[in-house]
Amino acid sequence: MPATDAQQQEIELARRLVAGEPGAFERFVELFRNKLFQYSLLVCGHHEDAEEVAQDALFKVFEKLDQLREPERIRPWVFRIARNACLMKRRKSVFAPERELSLEELMPQAGEDGGQWKLEIADWSSLPEDQALRAELQRVVREAIQALPEIYKTVLLLRDIEGLSTAETAEVLGVSEEVVKTRLHRARLAVRQKLDSYLRSSRGNSSRGKAN
Amino acid sequence: MPAGPHRPSEECRRIFALLSEYLDAELPLETCDEIEAHLSDCPPCVEFLESLRRTVELCRSFEPGEMPGPLSEEVRAELRQLYEKALRGRPSAGAP
Image (cartoon, rainbow over all chains, first blue to last red; front, top):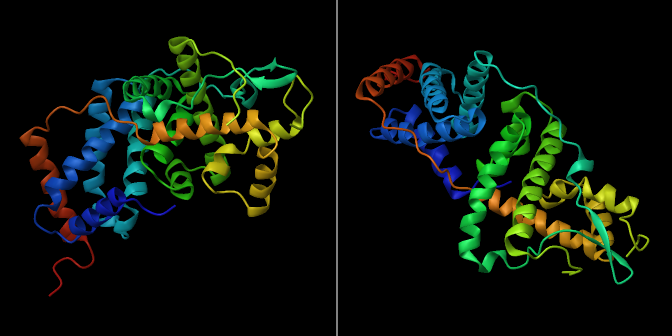
């Protein structure tokens, strides 16, 4: 997966930071504190906890900065620290046990239309043209991500929101690439299911037999 | 359409499990060909794939709803101290 412009800028910023260039510290703190906060907020779920975890993680980043040998790996390196900070916070709290998502529960129902089977899903074809709906969908996406069990949420956050590769995500989470792929697929399917449910209830466009 | 009139086929179920890797171009070419052959004859799977693709787009354009509060000057100063210490500890630091 090629790095996006934003990712390249972050890598360049990390190079400038470790080279001690003027202004790099301020820019890095501003950018990565925000990233650490967003990660912690989605994982921890509470603003105050996320502020605390993000700050702890930022201190760790600077405590360990002399160990960062490859600035181009800044993103997985920082997120590994964020993950550990979240785990430390989690150990101090009472969390519900993780729930596994099964493929079966994420498959749409099938029905019949004109003698052929079809899926009982919403009409997704008009989303790009409907800006107001897209804004509303962002809210639904946020709620759907927040509702994911943590093992799925962290993978989706790192892969789809932060744009880490499968290998980088596996490294951050200390799991195999196969596990990352499995969890990412189930996380996306769960978000899709919530979006589909929202589309069907809000637009009254439940099942139809459209084929793209 | 490969299945009977009322239900997805076993092939639909097999492909359902691979769709994210297909979208991410992380499958071997041979498997991609198998999926594309199935999709060419299975409109419900095409429709489902499209809904998943749009879900991924929405996740990738996800915008944070909350921002952290301002960083205190005290914390910023502590971070800067750690930063300067780390710079001194890096192998190339202070080299003539």
